Length: 77
Image: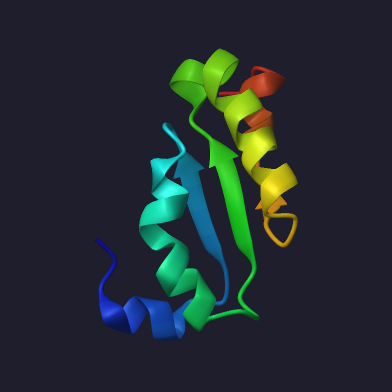
């Protein structure tokens, strides 16, 4: 869980998507900070599953943005 002070101080949010439930868990908090950009990042360990899931979530919530770990895709340590 995120400490309340952090919600007030954040100028952007990155949420790692593993199951899709993460978004539902924080949805109420995101509604309280509508001008703060939210980035959804598929969990790397299961990207075959989490990337399509994240893209599906983004179609349902177009106000959020996609974040990827580019360095892992191009194999930079």
